[in-house]
Image (cartoon, rainbow, N blue to C red; front, side):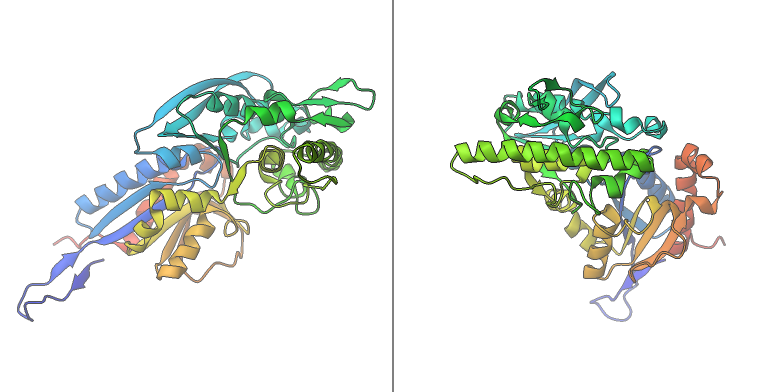
Amino acid sequence: MGYNHSSPYGENEPTVKERMKLFTAVDSFKGSISSQKIRTVTEKAIKAHAMQGADLTCDCVSVGDGGEGTAEAFTEGLSRKIIRVPVTGKTGRKKTAKLYAVGNKIYLDCCSACGISAENRKGDALISFTSYGVGELILAAMKEDACEEVVVGLGGSGTVDGGAGMLAALGATFYDRMGREVGYLPSEIDRVFRVDLSPARAKITKKLTVLCDTQAPLIGEGGAVALFAEQKGATAAGKRYLERTLGIFSAAADKNLSELLANNGGVTEPNSTAFLPCGGAAGGLGWALVYLLGGERKSGLSALFEERGYEERLQNADAVLCGEGLLDGTSFTGKVIGKIAELCEKYGKPLYLICGDAEPFLPLPGVVSGVYKLTDITPVIAECICRAQEFYENRLLALLNDIAPLPAKE
């Protein structure tokens, strides 16, 4: 597909071809291929297509909506330092997570410590999964001398513990009605009557920014359990238990928070923070980080697009490519695709999507000009996951041939 512009020198001037510019910002396909890998594969494929004669160029970026790859997306291509930190994984086993330091900021993904995995499908394993490693990661970031701000990406977590593990790692303690110390697992915090948040709050010595693009509260019909627990492996009985447990734990934490604020001349009456927006992010980590530890909540997508200049780069493109593993009703609300679709509508850009699979009969915004699914190759989801990169490249080539076909051979 060629784009011509008129010459200022008159009708006899030869027409000059201007290559079509494609801006690509494809999210990770969870459990199979990262946004960073997709960016690399996409850029390579488009350059190869152009080398064969297609009138096409590209601007490819990595993205993340707070989950997997968000810290990488914020710091990719910048002068950065990657710090590897040994932490406690969600099952209690040790693992290594990363901090990404750029200037006076340190970025981290909560899912690098407690991300969703195949272990989530083992019955009601959620009641024994912890966010403790996230607290260890935050503590390591706070101890870095050059750091003035810690930026935490929420999303992709495999836990629903209300951030109890994270709080415990930072020094918070929990007690039952008899004054006995209680553990921090979801299977234990239903016995919590009193919480001491002061040691954990004292550890937050730098600015704490929390990237969150969901409005879900901690508890209630649209909360952490109702919206996200099932996809993390919870059964119906497990969901009932977790909802009740988070209600008990949040009430005890709210009481202590009110006491701490009162001692500093603040609110004197207990107020429920469990129904406030963002609390349900990452299984309740949003609630603990924002409302109990005083973190500043920001839209992860808006912050990423602002810091990396993605909106201007999209505006300068002729067409846009986005995508994710599953295209469904949530894709256009607080996720990468939703943000990209809004900008495409704002600037009048056609949007093309590549996804693993798509919900049948899903209403799509008018800017969407085409959807390419890995399941168009085979309906077997397991095979799509195992061969995600191969199938993604296949769908990408189909898209490129549609929007920028190779010249006919003479």
